[in-house]
Length: 202
Figure 1 (tube, rainbow, N blue to C red):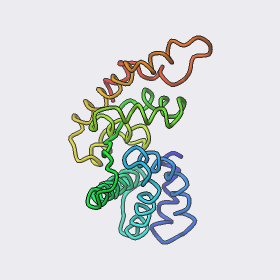
Figure 2: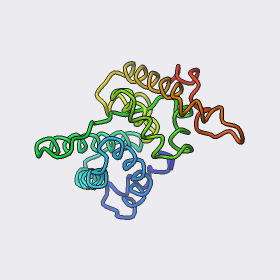
Figure 3: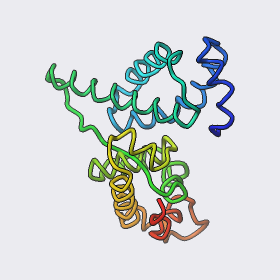
C-alpha cells in the first residue's frame, strides 16, 4: 500500500480509531516481520508484538505523515530487536547476530526478495556484512528511501548509499544469483534488478 493511501488511516488511528489502526497493521506488519526475521530470527513475532504495542501507546503523540510513520515504525522495531538481543545475551541463550539491513535501488534488490523466495533472499542478505545487510533490508523490505534508512540507522545518507551499493554488488556477484541469471528457460525476475547502474542513484 502506498504512503498516500495510509494518510487517512494514520490520522484516524492517531485519534484512537481501531479500524484505522487495523489498516496500518495489515499494510505494514508483513514488512516488519520480514525485517525482524532477518534481524532477530525466531524472536521476530514477539519483537513485532512489542513494536506494535509501543506504536499503540505512542501513536496519539505522533504528528508526522505516512512516510515519517514508516520510518518511526522501523526505528521502534530495530530498537526492540536490539533489546531482545541484549536479553538473549544476558540469559546466555543462543546468540544471534543483529543483521543490520537496508536497501538502495528498490528496483534492484526488491525482486531478489519479492520474486526469488523470501527465505532464499534473506539468507543471502544475511551473509552480507552487517552494515550492508541492514542498509539493503530497510530499503527493500521496509521500502524506506535513503533519508529514512539513514534516520533509522543513525547514519549519514552517504554512508547508507555506500553500504547499500556495496551490498547489492555483493549480491549481484553471488554464485547463486549469477546462476539464476543465466539459467535457461523463462528468466526469473530475481536478479535482473541487480545491475550496478541502478545503484548509483540509490
